[in-house]
Image (tube, rainbow, N blue to C red):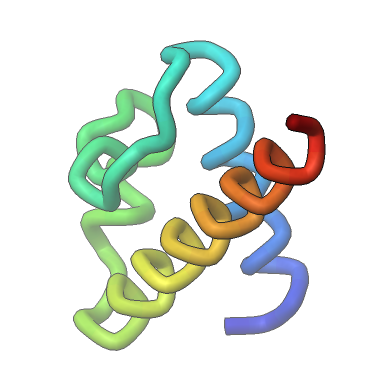
Length: 69
């Protein structure tokens, strides 16, 4: 994926977290009313990349929480 696509996915994850108060799984993104069709249309490799982006987002959030305590 290109950097711009990765940043868009990170923004979607962040907005999802702010709105729903939890970090989404890939399945949550695939079921999203607006973005679902895009995520459902990804190849297996692209879906794996999105899952990696989600995992990295979680790691960053944990690191941020640890630094603020």
